[in-house]
Length: 253
Image 1: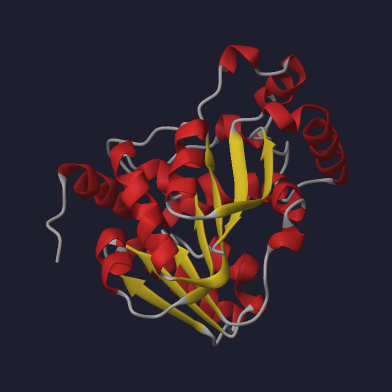
Image 2 (image 1 turned 90 degrees about the vertical axis):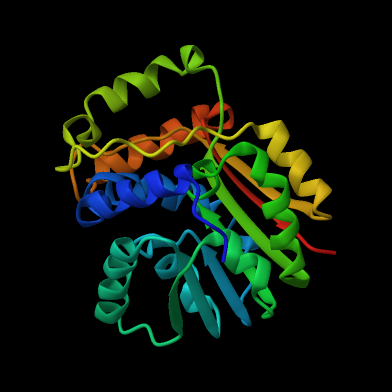
C-alpha cells in the first residue's frame, strides 16, 4: 500500500473533522445548481453495468446516479465521510452499492474490475496537480471500451470577471451564513487548470462526449424556493458558459 503523503493526511484530518456538517455546509446549498448543471449532460450518462464513484464522500453522487446501474462501488479515504454515506444509503434502501475505505491511488492501481461509468465529482481538485495525468491513465485502464467518465470540479477562472448579477445573488444566499463547526485547518486544494485537465484526458486515450460549465449559485433559503429555482436557472443560462465549475464527460474508444 502507498504511504500517505502529508497532503493526503491533511485532507483526511479535515474531512474527519467536517464529515458531520459536510452535507449541510457543502452538499445541500449546491444541490439545485448541480441538478441544473448535471441535467445538461444527462443524455451522455449511460445506464446498466457497473459504476465507480471516486472520492465518494458522503454519497451524494452515488445517490444521484447509482439507481441507473446494476452495481456501484464508492471509494473514499475518509471513514467518517463514508459513515455519513452509509447512513444515507441505508435510509434510501439502496442495495446495489458497496463502499470501500481506501486510498484512491491504491484502488485504481490494483482493482481488476472494469467499469462502465466512473464519476469523480468534487474529487480531483483535492489531488496534487502533477498526479492527475497518471490518475486519468489508471481511470482509463479500468474503464470498459465504450465506458464513460464524468468529472465535475471547480476550475481556475479570473474571479474578477464573475458577472455582477451572480455575485449579487450569492451575496444574499444561504452560503454566506454557513460554516463548519470544526476549526480544523482546511485541506490543500485548488481549482483545476482546464487546459491541463483536457490534455491529461486526451493523453489517457479518452475522447470528449459532453461538457458544460456553470457558476456556483446558492439558494436564498433551504430547501430552495420556487424563486430560487427560477433565478438560479436564469443566471445559469445567462452566464454559465464562463463559470468556475466544469462538468465534462469523456469516453473510452
